[in-house]
Length: 401
Ligand code: TXA
Ligand code: MG
Image (cartoon, rainbow, N blue to C red):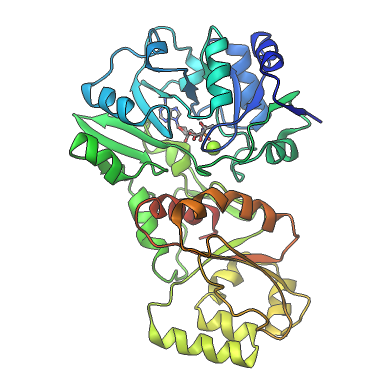
């Protein structure tokens, strides 16, 4: 059990002794250690069970603390810092001489960010060093947005979690680097491409052959059909993990196809753009027929590939012991009390249709559904505008393909 508290002095003492501490940020909770000390960084990797090839973001108290950490700062980066720091923007900059190898995992750039949480900013000001901090979740699992999430996931491996309440933004920072003077978004986040463009005049998304952030969103807005695994995909338990990092040395792990994933198998629901589908679904709902419903949604092939045979049998037999979770955006995707008394756990992300609220509640909702021991969960994507793009990006990665 870790202690959860607001004691900055205790956090400082532990960090100065080379220990790791859970810290709040406005995006998600981080697992922090002294960025200058190899042993602390190794502890972070070990506690998270994270591959050592996956670099960490260095958190600083302000742009004036970047000396030694970065070699140079492009003028566009200065403008972005000026506009968005403190805040959910991580910049990839050429690394300076003070950066130790373990933090960047051999990458030529270092990721830096000034978080906007008052408690963590205070902590960063008290310490003589910057804090390396990945999200405080076991590798590949849902990021934590409360101190209790951190305790539940890593509590046995760390001593202290600084409690800053629930994170107000709720999804990770936007990661931006520069290629030939062009700002490039490597991970979508709270700060959107339009926000960046308003400062820099131009921006593009990083794309890979098979896992570009943009492709992912295009893909999840269509009804997903069965498709073969890409050649470089390995199957790890129920989740497919695509080793995109091997394709390009700059790529960030948040871009691997499977990430941010609950233990319960997650399937994305199609949107109702097709009238024929809407009619089939309405018929199945009024007949209370789950199997017909899932067929009508063209989801059975995917379910057949990922669910255990006994779960599939129970779906086909309309067995009311099926435990299905549903995460919807604004309105219930399925009418309440439909489907013949089937235990349906449905969470609405934002009844007002507010994307900021949906982002803030997303991981909390996934954690909550994942605690229920469901057979599977169905998730609706959100409108793909503004921060909805980052939400859909995370949903796409939480889902099985
Ligand atoms: O909002 C956030 O960014 C949170 C809070 C705690 O600050 N942190 C976070 O860290 O999401 P993490 O480690 O879960 O994700 C950081 C991403 C990873 O995908 C990593 O590969 C990438 O940033 N990254 C870090 N340093 C990098 C570098 N030097 N070059 C390329 N990618 C890097
Ligand atoms: Mg993470």
